Amino acid sequence: MAVERPCPDCDPSSSSSVTRRQFVRVVSASAAAAVIAPSLRNANGVAADDTKPAAPESLVKKLYDSLTPKQKEEIAFPWDHKDDRGLLRAHVSNNWQINPHKLNSGFYTRDQQDIIEAIFWGLYNPDWKDRIKKQLQDDAGGYGKQQSIALFGEPGSGKFEFVMTGRHLTIRCDGDSTEHTAFGGPIFYGHAASGFNEKIDHPGNIFWHQALKANALYQMLDGKQREKALIAEQPKEREVHFRGKEGDFPGIAAKDLSKDQLEHLQKVLDALVEPYRSTDRDEALRCLKAQGGLERCSLSFYKSGDLGDDGVWDVWRLEGPSFVWHFRGTPHVHVWVNVADDPAVKITTAG
Image (cartoon, rainbow, N blue to C red):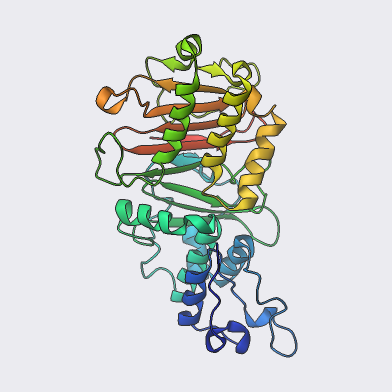
């Protein structure tokens, strides 16, 4: 995807400071904005590399360093902080606030809001920015209105994690601090594009194509394979804990698929990880490979929850020893994701 470059008058490297207008312009041109602080410039006031966007991890440290003692008291916690939800940094839900301070509230300065926004967009595939903006608009009235964040640990001095939550949103940035896990821990995405009760074909839903790709594989199955793959009752959507290597996985085992069917399953997997930045996509695939790859997974479809009883299965799941991608498409899309290279990793959930 082509990246629009700012004009020389707006280029942060032309000045020793960055105005908010310039910052937002850069954010709009790139999914991960290049925040070039004076402290990162050389003796001549020129950025060492003004073409490479700052990684979300470095922006998390910049955000942390900008927090006042009062702000840290409210949103920054020790690495293993627990509350009534359990280990808070390992919690995931379909609609929740990790703390009460919304992003566009007066709790954050304008510069802090810009840094948070740059972190957020830096966690996604740039090609998905318009689609994610649509999801946020449809489900929460736009970015910043219904989202909140928390920080765990101390960036720059050991383990740390940034977590953003909201309606149909849990996403993380951890700089590989969270051992054995992809995405920094369990994540959630969803969309109710045409209202709480979506129509059969989910018009405008930015994630429904993932289900259509999975259903295309179902159509490739023969009769006996379909008997294995299709299950009457769906599990509770929040049940995405790992079953381990000895687990009894529902559906049809990938090892029982033909070569062309397995190739299509790989395309399904590619569609699932596509919305996220390349480093997180790669980490998720490495975790899956560590547990035997797609061949150790099973694919299941569920009769219950079939909108319109049309045989296009709205609820389905791809699952392995330490890999769960649960797609629930009724009454609208909810997707729960839990990926690690070790089944011993624990999470907490609510739904």
